[in-house]
Image (cartoon, rainbow, N blue to C red; front, side, top):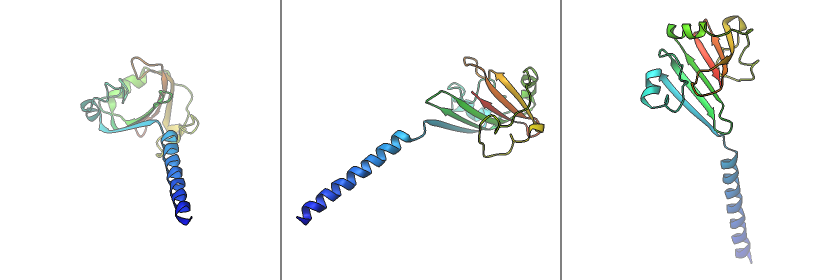
Length: 148
């Protein structure tokens, strides 16, 4: 009788483990994170062809981080930039300053928290074939945050 109980207990534990693993697979994030040290590295891996980072990223872009949500197709891209992005920025329509927090974005860095350093562009198309997104620029740190 004890052996039968032990067998049932083992089966119960195995079923519980299987259910937990299945739940974790279902609940797991559907985000794809990509990081590149430079624009050239992103090009060499073919990431530009797969639209990460955006088509209009400056060639001076460094510390590129892209997170794409596979469920809704949205993307958040951050990067540092050089003077080659200044002309693109100047051609955009500036809106009143926002911070990353006011846009509902939580970031691990502080580059997008001081509205006095930021320029906000609510309708920017960094991708040729996509709808416009939001671009937040830190003019002092020369960092950019793009939300598709």
